[in-house]
Length: 489
Picture 1 (cartoon, rainbow, N blue to C red):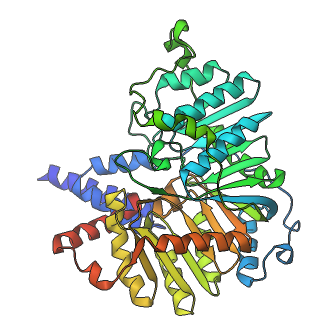
Picture 2 (tube, rainbow, N blue to C red):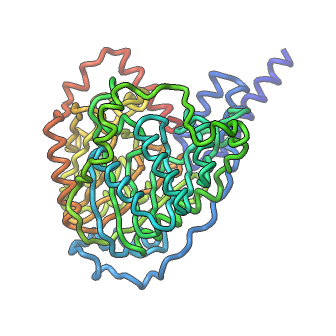
């Protein structure tokens, strides 16, 4: 009996420790407490391992001063743009700067523009991707990088240890053999259960000669081209930027992530000298890839027309005290005067962002939310559906996309503010992952994104309360369980 009482007391102390450590995040605390109740002691051990301290990235280089750009100099005439600019500048200490901007709405045009830009590099190339696959498009980019490195361009290649875990060591070895510096962000290795496992570098950044930049939602993989069997059409959004000052902020974010990444060592020694420079793969090139190998290089980089605007880059991560991107979304919702359009593959907001959406509608703002009918992560999809009814009740217009895979992460506010990048509308992007977004102040960009939103609606249907009531009762129970664990998804 005394042993049982002792174990019970220890379990209570451990659960109270979880509650006190995460007292500022009650939903996350509740999720871990439930895990602790279901898996006594072991649940707390997992919590302690996954929630330990993380390495802190160096502070970003400051660019200019707060007085460099004032609200009146922005190409905007709305109070929402002026307020959002001030908030982002207060968070990042970086003013909005001029840039040339071009949007892409699919992987084919994005890769075509990227290949052209990589081919034009003269001095430096920095690449950072959550997913970099050893497939046709991945090998095409890798081959070009090796060629440019051989021609004297300094190249740094950063990939996430979880998203790119299937990238073969021989592929990394070949890049290293050509002089490309390779690092992995929090590699997944023994003992796999570590405090870094849950925190991923979700960004997609390319910086070329400190003058050309790419950022958005597109990784490197055949699925993003819409040509991978079994995946179907892929809708995404990416942006290309031109301008030294605009790219400086992206360069700073890359440098911060590069500083805490792990240097890839020892790969060259595992590849016999006679095979260096040859890509050894575990999987053969898909048969369909050869049919469009030449077409890939010849693709025109069709995107929206180049336009002039102002931009600000904003990053966030678990090593920051402030949830910068979450605060950015909150600010956009609370400062909107006429309309907000949100496109996101995952919708699991926290209470404050959810309240901001409702409040925006109640004050007369038209809020439209576009989400996939079938998210590729089922647990996140189940959790998302628990938010829809309360949003429908206050007047949010929700549409379910059926035209393929919806992976774009875009928010337009009124007539001249756009937010796009890698971050989703979920708690993982707000608190757990390392993310990056671009804020664009330009009526032409907002208009183009709104045009694309209307086009996406042609492949969607409006969500109704009746549709939400179709699933059987057990399905609703699964949704509630997923909502409970949403802070950990």
